[in-house]
Structure formats: C-alpha cells, structure tokens
Image (cartoon, rainbow, N blue to C red; front, side, top):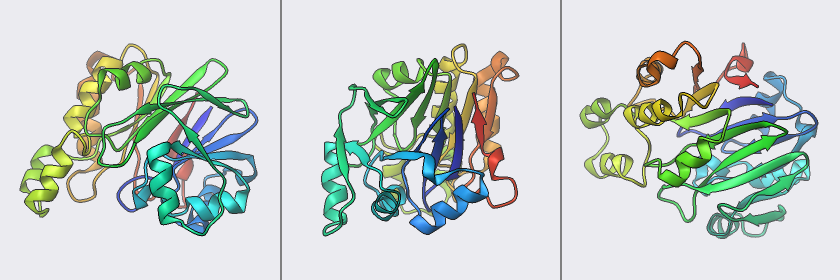
Length: 261
C-alpha cells in the first residue's frame, strides 16, 4: 500500500491511498481540478480511485468532493451526521453517497475500511483505518484528543497519518483571538505537537511509518513537529520513518510526502 498526501492543513486536505489494484481518496478539500492536477504530479492514477472517504463536513475536507465524485463516477462514504451536513451544502447535486458507521467495517474493492469516531467540532467526525491484505494504515486528523477507542484502532495499524496541528506556545502567543485559541485547544479541536508525540510514544512498538499532518501555518513549524515527534518516539526514533506533510507538496517531488508499505 502507498499513501500520498496531496494537501494537508486549513487550506485543504486530501490523501491518496493506493493498493495492489485500486485506490481511495480520504477527503477532497481542494477543487476537483486542483486535486487531479496534484494527483498527476504525484504519479497517481485517478482511474484507480474507487471511492472518496470523508472524515467530516468542514469545507477544507469537502470542497471538491461532490464534483470529483461525479467526475470519477465513484461513491462518497461518510457517517450519517457528516452526510446530512454534506448533502445540505451540496443541495441539488447528485454524487452517490453511502452511510458508514463507526466501528463497522465495510469493503471497497480489495480494501477493508473501518471508520472510528473522532473528537472534533463537527456533526459526526471520524477517522479511517484502511487495510488491504495484511497491511493496515490509520488516518486520524482533525481531533482534539486521542481516546482509548481511537488509540486501539491506530495500534492495529502498520502506519499512521496523524494530526500534529499546533505548538502550544506559538498558539498562546500568536495572533488568533481568544475564542479561536480556546476552540483549537479544546477536546473537540486539534491535536498539539505534545499530544501527537504522546500518541506516537504509545504506538512506537507497533508501527513502521508515521506522517504528521494538518500542521498550522500560523501556530506551528515543520521543524517543531518533527522534533516533538522524534522526542516522543525516543529509542524508536531511528526505527520508524517519520515525515511531516506540507500544505502543498508542490510539483517537484510530491511523492516524497507519503510512504509505502
């Protein structure tokens, strides 16, 4: 399995997961045209995409979902709460939508997909564990905390895409108004670098790869994210491949912003 991040952050999120025969998208928070452009630059094949998995209804995760799903002729999978909010925003359009439930595994082609509940200020947010054969990747962004149930799902994976949104000091001393700082720090906001590092510390003897994602451009830096993650991994830091996803990988070497199992 291969994971390639096409966009990650408040300006848009989209991840391409490719298996032996097919592929999936997790979120589509850019325009359909831009996603296809970045996918081509990354060496991906849109004809392999069998479905779009949506974590929640915020615009930086659904901006291109409807148009792209209709263009590719593929279904959209999301929880009931997310679908209600999504269809309300896309009224009058005709993408095929399918409801999924946290804790209930479903199949898309050769993929086995398990949604799990996340903690974010959305209707019914979730993350996804995607498996093909013996390999399993967990995608967990946009959550204010990692619950025991969430950790158990991630602990069953060979690799994870995990949020590391903000540096607490940069957030505290940064330009955001107090209400927004409070929202970001809350249990329904976003994971901080220390939060992500603690999660990786507990996952260290289970995973082989980790990519840190949804990094704030105002309240964080890739260098801080990586340093925090490596400190959390401790003695495992030289055994686990760790990378940081940028907002826009660019067209030079976009394939470097992902991993292969």
